[in-house]
Length: 386
Ligand SMILES: [Zn+2]
Image (cartoon, rainbow, N blue to C red):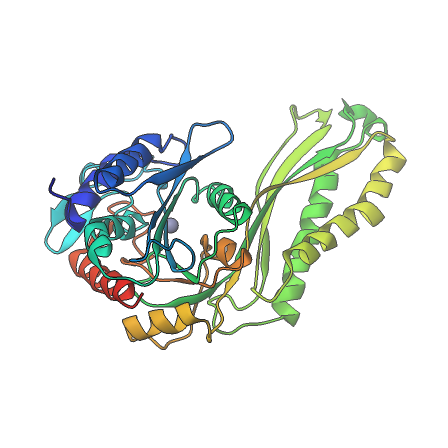
């Protein structure tokens, strides 16, 4: 059989509409059967409801060894195109000049396409260490898929020497990003006719107090640090981005729901920050609400969390990727990736992939041909070094 090159693989991958709200199974099963065609048995790790899957495959070392080696990691889902003005069909890879347009071309099917295109070459190389492919689902909605795969690998005692997450970095080496932690909060008060205000407990007003407290914490970190000047925003941020409450202009609202997030610097504990929020709820806000209404409640549930990344400069994978890309810069980025999850599982990880984050998530997302070629050279040499 003839194996696809990078461009053909990218065409194929972009054509699957793997917007996070959709299943990614068609794409995953297509890759699985293509790999089977060249003798690589890929394993699927499904989402709890079975509608999506991660794919994990090992290209063993020359001696058949499957432990150690490097993981090439990418997410298969893409962000929606709803309401975006595209010049061509987002799910048909379209070349105009030196650019390849399509949803996911940059974030991050480009990296996956190159890795897949090189599989036959990887298999033919006399490698002393294995190479692994890890494709996840639901990264864009809060890194829901990768933990399922990483947990399964850790449970069975799989060991890896390093991991490259191929998010778009223009083929530069990204060694750190912040953590992302998203929470949903429901404030339960008591309804009343607004002419009888003292009989109610106004959920919106109490939610507002908590939101302002979150804002105060954010201002504290902005004013007092800790700081890491390598980040665009060099401190931990907290923000409330959604709120809903109330049913009528003359009714005391019994429910207010809002979502807040914080993005912590790698050195700062996400648990500690959340504990500051909880402490305010339990020591101040809830006692105050319960004086109005005994049954008042504030429920806070975690929606998504992706740990921060801080790669060790002396880790073998950091040094290898730096050598292969000739990039010695210290780059720490604002966006989150799955790299923190691999790092947390004890796998030294860096982020390096084709395309610019500037094009990610936008209408007319594209990757430059030269970026795919640079990624090919990079992955070929990375595999040769094994
Ligand atoms: Zn991405």
